[in-house]
View 1 (tube, rainbow, N blue to C red):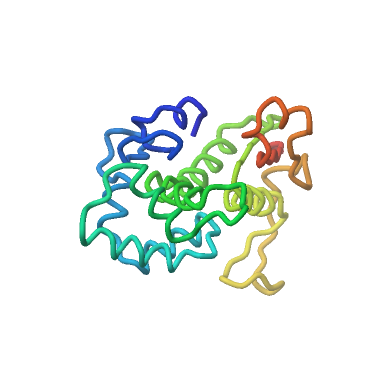
View 2 (view 1 turned 120 degrees about the horizontal axis):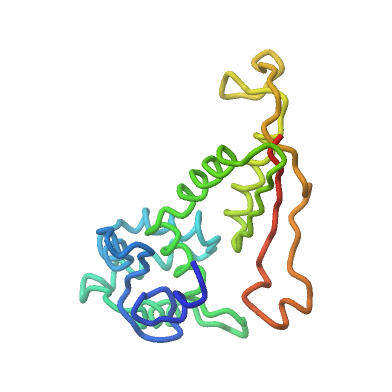
Length: 208
């Protein structure tokens, strides 16, 4: 997702401006955030908020959505943001209570984790030996996917079962070399110039 997308109210990614509860990267797809919020069960919503947003108050927020939508459908970003703020006041916190919920819904609506995995696999396949793949993520879940993908591709074996034990390992030539063993974060100067870079994590791998 890019800053121009986030900043356009009609795309429905942000609650900073009121707009339709959409969040689709591809306007041709059927599923919108409104459809998800209005049709998913409280348990399904809580799992989305927890898995994709690390939202500790996920169950209470999901139950509140389920209760409120019986009165009227959620159609706008402001509707949802105001409900989140009402049931989970800031109490001195910098981030708006709806921040993690909006992030989680965006990830779910666009299958961002699945797209990331497919993109990583395709990118490494297209690289020539010596070519490098640099990936910047903005969420801990995305970073974990990239880290685990890189480690798996850099191993000199494949696991032939569900458990990684020596008996189930088959030797192979590693596909990539990890250029960065740990993720690289943005520097103070970059964060000062672009606050959205504060959560950015860079990982680099090289095709062997």
